[in-house]
Length: 78
Figure 1 (cartoon, rainbow, N blue to C red):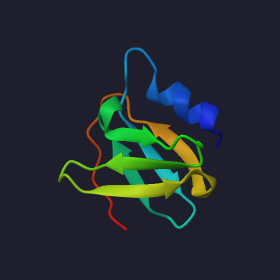
Figure 2 (cartoon, rainbow, N blue to C red; figure 1 turned 135 degrees about the horizontal axis):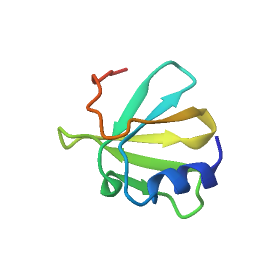
Figure 3 (cartoon, helix red, strand yellow; figure 1 turned 45 degrees about the vertical axis):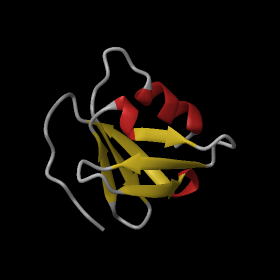
Figure 4 (cartoon, rainbow, N blue to C red; figure 1 turned 135 degrees about the vertical axis):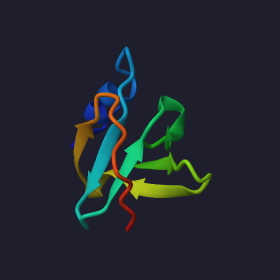
């Protein structure tokens, strides 16, 4: 997964919720474009969760992005 692929998914019009899959098997759902912030260097992102917590993710550990097409997905925690 590249930074460009994340940016394309993040800035798609109209926005569709998506799931970030990581190498350790965890996943994070992004339900709104404002719920992700990228570091200036571009290596990490911060994903804000609905419960107002956040998680810092190293993009080198992201294996894929899954577009959810507006479907509500079961929440998986890691």
